[in-house]
Amino acid sequence: MILAGNVIAWLETRRVLVLLVALGLFAMSAHSVTDPDVWWHLRTGELIIQTHSVPRADPYSFTRFGQPWVNHEWLSDVMIFTLYRWAGWGGLIVAFASIIGAALLLVFLRCPGHPFTAALITALGAVASAATWGVRPQMLSLLLASVLLLILQRFDQHPNRVWWAIPLMLLWVNLHGGYAMGIALLALFLGGRALDVVLGFERWPRAAPQLRRLALVLAACLAVIPLNPNGVRMYWYPLQTLHSASMQNYIDEWFSPNFHELKYLPLLLLILAILVGITLSPRRLRPRELVLLSATTLAGLRSVRHIPIFVLVAVPLLSDLVSDWLGKGAAVEIRRKRPVARTMKVNAVVLAAFAIFVLAHVRSVVRQQRAAEAQHFPETAASFILKNAVPSSIMNHYNWGGYLIWRLYPEYRVYIDGRADLYGDSFLDEFAESYYLKQHWREPLRKWGIRTVFLPRDAPLVTALLSTPGWEKIYIDSQAVILTLTPIADGSISK
Image (cartoon, rainbow, N blue to C red; front, side, top):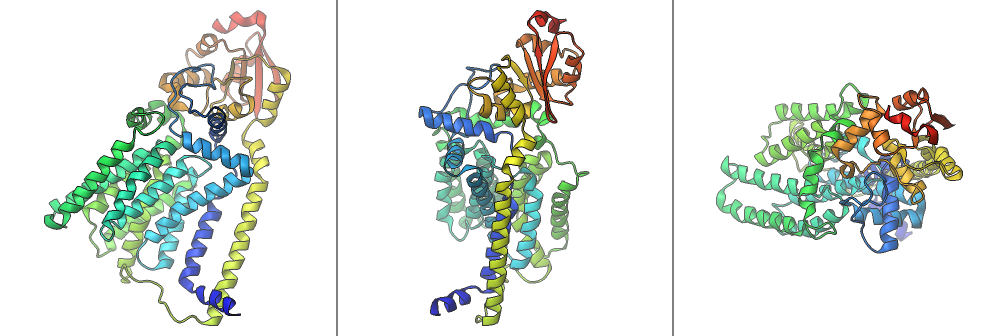
């Protein structure tokens, strides 16, 4: 009875709200695994564990076989495969839902003002960034960026905690190339603090030791970057990715958000709310806030991939602006009253009911994984290739390359997969030229000795080859077509 009473007393409204937000974010983040790159991450994690080494050259494709490969996600690959081996798809879904949920829960905890307002704004930010979620190493970057922003936001109260950014960066540079985002956030925060001094928001005697500490931490973070299997190459690798024109042109998540699409409406609402909040709130933003907000807004508008980072910065700031506009002040919280038994029991019932709903939702998502795989990837066609010894040198669809690495390697190597940085701009342009029947569309087929084409049914190249002598359709289903070139017609593709 005493234990039950203590549990009920613990369930005050504020604690229950935090738990409900955490469960809600976890449930929102739980989705079937459909990211096309997860498959080569699984295969690479398996390869690293088997060989006890990180591959430095490409083992998976016949177009780039043996070429240098900067596998900046090696530790994430090991983690993903280990989770899959121990707990299957369910383990991966739960683990990455927890990672995404934790990143956004930290955002909620960073929000000043009324907790209910913060919860609503956090939910808006979560929906705005949901398009990029999945079982992918990028989600680990999201979590680490959220941790780093928490450290920076509380720098004035706990300045020594900023030293934790150094081991954080050491872990980050081995998990994902998004570590560069952490370096950028540190540099922007340091520059913003310097602007605070220059523009009179802060006095130099007080700011000087803090600026020195931040500069030392930034220098130390830069110094640990080579402590990874790829060494000093990780200094310039993220810059090469950001400046890839083909990735910007062909890969959806590198596109700018299209506000004609409904899924980007929450992002638009978040941006507009911040503009209105800045206008109406009596609080004047400090330079450090404007610097971070401006940089991340520009990044989010430039690329869908960067929207979650904008959300990490924008949500707490909007919560603060709304709090000031409502006149509640940044420190207002739900008042702590002596627990009332009836209220606590209602809280317990609500929390238990929501937890049951979340568990049922996650269980349903895990059960649907098999169907999701069959819907998004050519499972049956891949099995056909293995069973019928289809000729190698297969030109495959970009989004299917990772799946084929998981299903067909080492019996077959792929033409292309999601490691766009490995293939380079010229190769991606070459593939697009062939796929979309541009001027020299036959040249890649001849150059790489393509004997099998494995593409979606509606691919323009499939239509062209079906009317080209020598190409034979050997398989077709609702997703894919497999065409092969008869030996006697090898020369026809160069005509």
